[in-house]
Image (cartoon, rainbow, N blue to C red; front, side, top):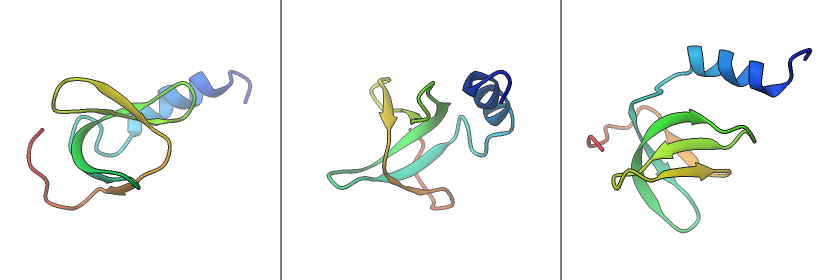
Length: 71
């Protein structure tokens, strides 16, 4: 990687599946729906919660195809 992770991140987000769409998320402590916003500089998944807060997820089960409510 000549240009490092920022270049990979940029390309990944350009072609990323479901960016801007609602996804269902399950962690060890919680289950919720949020808008998939992209990936952070450290590789975490970024989601926008119903209250507008952007949250970083490092470990979670994502249901890409489950029917989810609009966030």
